[in-house]
Amino acid sequence: MIDAVGNPQSLLLLGGTSEIALATAERYATRRPLRVILAARPSPRLDAAAQPLDRAGATVTTLPFDAADTASHAATIEKAFADGDIDLTLVAFGLLGDQEKAWTDHATAVELAQVNYVGAVSVGVLLAEALQRQGHGTLVALSSAAAERPRRSNFAYGASKAGLDAFYTGLTEALRPAGIKVSVIRPGFVHTKMTAGMKAAPLSVTPEQVAEVIVDAVANGREQAWAPAPMRHVMSVLRHVPRPIFRRLPI
Image (cartoon, rainbow, N blue to C red; front, side, top):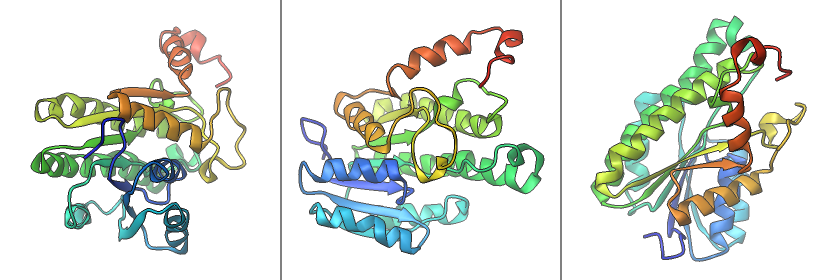
């Protein structure tokens, strides 16, 4: 169970090599004994991801998981819950890729939508079932500030995240009667391997800073949170800018 100050005993990371998810797990691991399941494609990177958590004293296991292979998701979730209840699940996988290719190349566009939206919906339905069955738990989904309003520079990515955002926002209400909490986290530009080489946007953050936002959201039952917090006001303004003006903005 999640304790009185918001610390879980068990944690499932769907996207077990995500820098944000791992930073979140490391933060929790310093606070209390923690069981962590890292679910991702088998690779040396997944094996390496477990090492800092091991050093922090967490009990870590890995689980094969492919976000695009929705047919395998039910078995993956079943295995994740087989060894006991899971207090907190992070849906932290995603693709960014080449944003021009994402709307001009059919295979790239479909893959982006399949992972970021279809895959997220697939595990969301299965996790909702599993959490209701165990009678408690918190589900955190990593969305993006890009979900707020499509921009020319990344509208394919933004569209896929907008779908995820809408689904998990709705799941927040659907699971409320069962006492299951859902939190949607909307980071802006995050300095990770995925964004390496890209020009950083204003209000950019590190994975550790996003992890702080996640930990705070879980502890305080926040259904939505921005990283950093001022990004909420920036996107609120941009959402209401008239389209003729919006398309002239250098974003």
